[in-house]
Image (cartoon, rainbow, N blue to C red; front, side, top):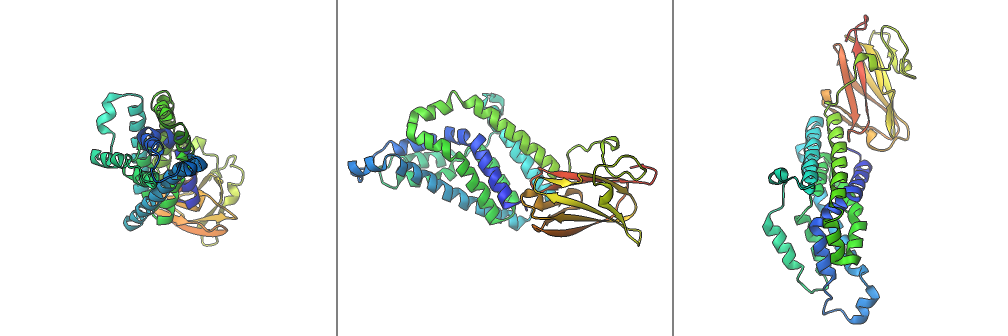
Length: 354
């Protein structure tokens, strides 16, 4: 299970740099329509006093609530099915592929349009009919109903909420996403339809580039989380070699041979890294990995060993042991729950053969 804080930050950054413009193209017209209709129940004085802050705030607040509830439900779904590291990685790769499709669609590549998932047309028609209402609560109703007509990036974030495996974490990533899109929607509320047309036209290409960059990051994280990221060859491993050589700083001290012939590998989990990130030990020897934390936060506390199906939430401060068994020559990778940070342990025979 990934860190709630890490996924919240991921949601905010995705919404701020990619989701805002993408969702504005789909939902901006709804906000413009709602804000542009003065309620007959509001007095002129009340409208002038509140300006556009009230309807825009109602729209964004209700949108935040609906998406947080959806994120909690998706997190519960993830907890029920309890996806393993490889399943979570596959969902992240799917999210990345969806983002690529959405970006290509925004670039105007017609060949991908049939593969781009879209909400049922009936949902969109019902929500747009609600925009014609002149009720005081219309902006809030529309904001809440935007959950029924998600933009492309929203669908990808929803997959991340499933991989979180917890209602609080799922709600955090979706709430963060809405908060990230908030500044642009606030601007849309003030500039109304002209701003919506601007985002749909001149800045569409910029949006597509940003979505594509987020897609590349998501695909890379999924590959690392699944253990499918290409591993550098033995010559590139700066570690504590079994057969001698220059070790990475701290790598030699990370390996301890116990009295019974077994070995213990200790790595430090810091907020933005694991150290040492590469260690070489003997193959064919019972091995225990100890992950030490000291005031550690962020997604590194969600520790994953894909090949072993190991998922552990590390304490903020403490030591967590993982039995690696007796390994054959080869490389065992580990990563954080978001696929952002990781490292590897290389098992070699005394002669230096993997």
